[in-house]
Image (tube, rainbow over all chains, first blue to last red; front, side, top):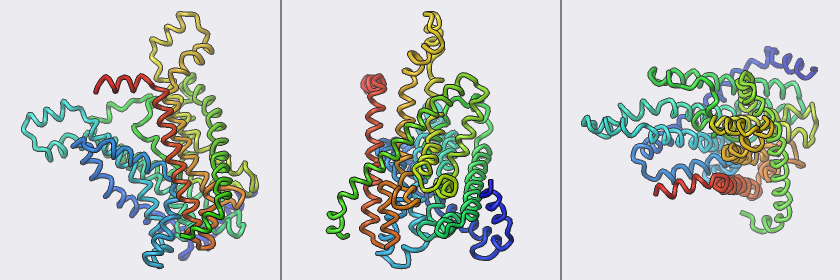
Length: 246
Length: 217
């Protein structure tokens, strides 16, 4: 495997670990934009999901919008955002903003659907019991519904987060940095070593992110709920299958 | 928006639309066949279930741009380079849904089939598979929509690929917004249309769900 060894040589070359085009800086860009995009997606999806799940109003609308959102190709969203944002301000279109728009559109559906489904799925008897004990709506939400919904909400956040980290790579096509740069630049000049090194970096980051979110999800799950998780793995996890095109 | 340009390029649009559906269709069919084998293996031999799912999950996590460009030195600018990643990304969705579908068949039903003297093969194709169809169709929907999105990314491999994504890359390269929209909007609509078609198919595959819903209301 000649290409593999070339890629490895590229990766271990110290000059590729230094400066603004170096791997640490590209990794930082990648993670920073992923983090910002995820934060925006959470700010949009969590309140709406909680409200729809708690009140059970407009559920069909929310689910339909989320379904359409997850069908939409990210590449198309970023591409459309470039000229639109450039029209608003020529500066905007050629920076990271179109990529952020694409990532928010990508991550909102899984987070929204899981938040809604997690809260709406809480046993009604428990909610009624809380109500009977004189809990206010806000107390019900905070003390009953949200804690029980945490595993499913966390699964949605994991799904959204992992998809963002993988898909931010596309931003490199539209001028954004991040680890995708090595793929696009390497491809542009036919530098196979750089392409393979970039592919390894991007793949390793995506897999690491997935594992990190899995650990986080387990940590966030209240202890009483962990025991009930099926061990067989036969059952599809709630809505993990939402993951779409990266 | 340059309307004249759009009118002049409607032929190109239909060519790219067909290419898009064709590239996605091949991947979904091949991916389904491979996954069917893997899912049956996973359900029959439980110990393979975890590893099969774990490997497809890892493959699924890798960004598509990386696989497209990394394959070029190996398989060149060919349809294979487009199809290998596309097929790869359908595996997780298909394997999980087919296996879950086969698992969803109640034990009573399996025992009834065994009691009637069905062979294992006949039980699989005449009992388990038909009962798994609702979840399989759900998988078909997710895989098709996801693949349609990924075909646009294959436009990075040059003018011969990408389906509607071709216009996105070409338009961006020359800084021509009309062409970007010309590729991006139809590809979004195609993905949404596929989603809607498969939802209809899903409803048809599970008529009892509709009957149940009507009874409740």
